[in-house]
Length: 472
Ligand code: ARG
Image 1 (spheres, rainbow, N blue to C red):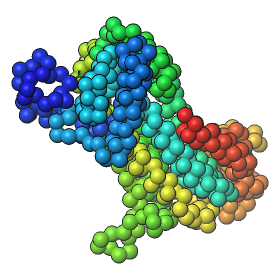
Image 2: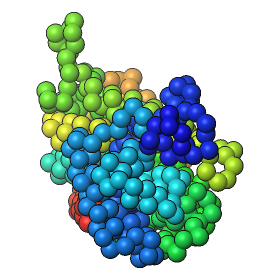
Image 3: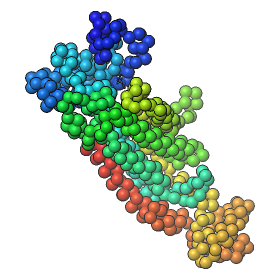
């Protein structure tokens, strides 16, 4: 290292001068990777213990290094130690902090490891920790949805396909249909966690170390299930980040679909729900406006979550093994996805838990648009009419009602007979929303007793997921 080069640069030895200003600015990642500091320090403590077991740090040295790392952790968390303008990345800054505390002894910690295995380890530790926070926030949203379903357990609603009235459903059934995708999202993250639980530390730059280190001991100290099986893969692999970003993007898509529905439900045309004042915004010009911004932002944020995934996949595509500096571009999309989910999920949960459902309006419109027509056709099928003929007969009945501006149940016996010989007065027996709902009693159906079972089952799943998030 020359006199002029900054004392904390980790690679000054063979260079005659300092780096160009433009390179330094391009190379610098500390402004975003500083959030890895607590994880880098955890990994450093595990590494120090392994150096001690290998006889490369004596008892007193280990003791001094551990105390200094502990202090550094405290100081970094409380803003008393910060990266300075010379620190290229989080690893550089923390090595400087260690050197400031224990002098040359701090330089021993770098033995047997490289920023390549360090940064891959830090990012895995960071993500495994934050995935648990994200799962916790998802379960809070699910609980808000389930509580709304419970409060509106008997309320029928128009069920739609193609955004047209199709068949009545329980509103609770519809709400729970937004909970199941989130259940799958959590299952996906738990499955992700098994694959992410591999420690790169010990891979060094790419080839492992000639020093007698113990990667398995480091792995288990850091809560990983095992050490990486291949040191080249250990430093090159970012599948865990890409897979996480896919999970995050899909959560974003699920929140977006929920957001879109809530936007519709709050319109004057639907009037299914009213948002609480605390979760809606006004207009700067139109005094009457109450806007569903939380739902719209949830919908909009899906765009950046999908972008984060595409960013990383594009960085990874075509990268040769082992480490390449392109990999530094892995962090910002990952951090953005984590921040975005932790920002959006509590807002959506708050919006859902405080929204007022208009049960009267839902009930009164559940059968709008001749939504019981299928029930009449299936009634005819039970009496032996081929479905093709039943469908046709009820189709004629719908046209008759449209022309005469009446409901299916309002047609007289003689008019029914005029429309079709299949339409006998007993078709009126199936023209009730309660009857239509109760008859959908196969598993997964919208019959009240099935929805009750579904609600209990999904609540149990959510409880189990919430405890997974806090237990590990
Ligand atoms: N800041 C770098 C990153 O995030 C750390 C690894 C640097 N390694 C290297 N050989 N230059 O990827």
